Amino acid sequence: METTATPAADCPCRQKTDRYISFDGIDCAGNARRLMELIERNMPADGTGRSFWQYFMAKRQPRSGPAPDDLFLVHSHINQIRELFEDCGDEAALALLLQVEEECC
Image (cartoon, rainbow, N blue to C red; front, side, top):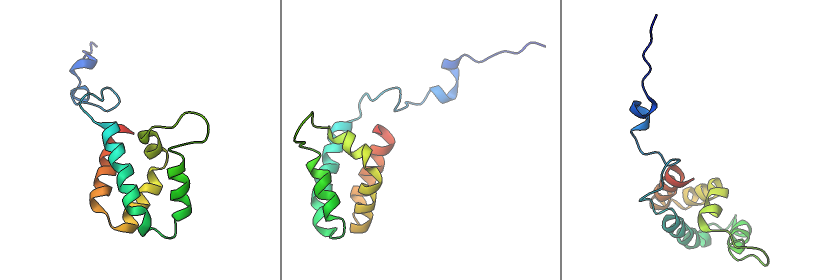
């Protein structure tokens, strides 16, 4: 019995751009920077988590060592960021967070 294998390049699953293969044309750094601005805008509305957000923002400018980039911080705390935007009812921020999560994280 002879089987013919489809070359990997011909596979329909390989014909779609995948974020793990190429970030070409995706502004991950710019979108992460915009998310940080949205976090800053929504922080005052989140009175219960104020301590966490002060800690989070302080991580951007550490006392020692290199400063992490915004995308790293977003990726590391994506669930807390999602909760902030949900609690504040910021649908535009949630949409951008989902986009960054799918394209860049």
